[in-house]
Length: 314
Ligand code: R5P
Image (tube, rainbow, N blue to C red; front, side, top):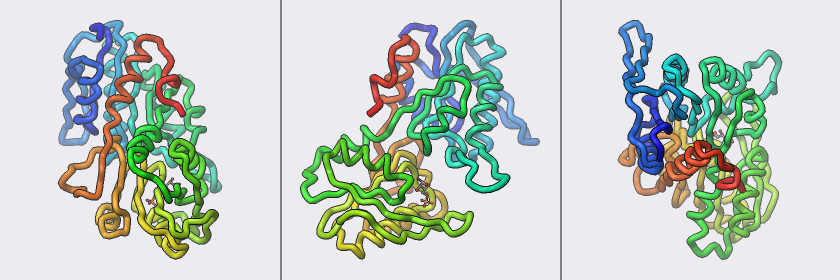
């Protein structure tokens, strides 16, 4: 790659950023991030970026707010260092679920994040599998959204899928699950999940579709507590489903999600490295697919002015 393409990384997912750099065939950009005892962050870009096409990789994982502020400060430092164009590469977009005014006087923080990125100096956003498509429209700078669906679907497509069915664990995930069903040429069922309070507890009530005697592939965009997935498993089991496999783009895994999945009937859980996890914490039930090539190919396409959607969109 030419030496005007530079990729920097925040602190959130250094391993993924390094893999993306390897794929694009550039060395990681040099920067120093320092945290003072008063929790202020300072960033210094340690190489010339004047006029360069610069990408900064920062995912939204704990500490979410620190990582967001760190990203904004890095963008600001790059802007004042005269970078030519700055792309915020967000494998998992911050506050992605805060995307709608579904209650009175509620914050829509995914939109605020778009405003903050633009104000800090970002010219573009490159991200993956947003919770809702309207988030692209929150931003006044261009957004390229990659999808984890082809990666995960291709993984499952390598096995014999006779008697399998794709299951959407809630109505909201039905459209995304339908893409899996189409790619894998499988039938589909949908769970009707309800939230009765503004908390993370969901209750699966009904099911559309016939899972009797079938092996289920459950797909969601993200797993937080694991509650949605486990409720869905409970109901499909009641309706006669046999083996259960699951997948999601973003494995946030808060609280007891990992032990809950380990103890659940899920035989294999397939996800990506948009959120970093130590393999020893996860164990053998989990398969992590790398999104580095997808992001690397997208960065190369953006740099060269080629189509990104042609590469990845379904
Ligand atoms: C919600 O609409 C999302 O698509 C996921 O179903 C949700 O984020 C999963 O959260 P949890 O694992 O806590 O049920």
